[in-house]
Length: 182
Image (cartoon, rainbow, N blue to C red):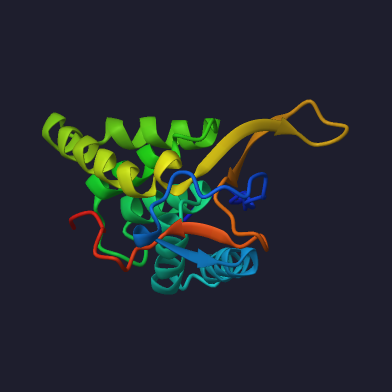
C-alpha cells in the first residue's frame, strides 16, 4: 500500500472563540491528544496494523483533522483495516478536500472516476452529511497555504479556531449520537 507521507497538519491556536460548535455537540481534547493519536495511527500504518490505524484515523477525522480524513478515505477505498467501501471513501475524501491540498483533490478525483453515477450520487449525499458534522465549518477548522522559511513550495496547513483559554481544542463529539448514518 502506498500512502504519501501523511503530512501531520497540526492544529494551531489563533482564537479563543467558541464560535462554530454548540457545546452539546462538542468535546475538548488537548493538542497532545490529537498529536499522539496521529502519531499512533501513522506508526500503525508503518507496522501494517491497519485495523488499529483505521480506528485512530477515524477518531482524528471525526475531530475535523483534514489529513486524517484523507487517510481514512484511502483506507476505505483500499479496504485496509475496514471492509472496502469506495462510497464512504469518496465521502471522506470530499470532506478532506475542503482543504486547499492538491494531493487530497487528486485522490478525490481518482476515487470519483472509480464510482458509477449512482454510487457517486450516494457518496456525495454522504459527504454532505459528514461535512455538516466533521467539515471545516462544523469542526471550527480553517486552512491556508503557507510555505516554510526558505522555500517557495506552499502547503495547506489547517488550524482549529475553537480553543479553550488554555489552548485545548474544541472538536466535534463523535459520541453524541450525531454521527452520520453508516
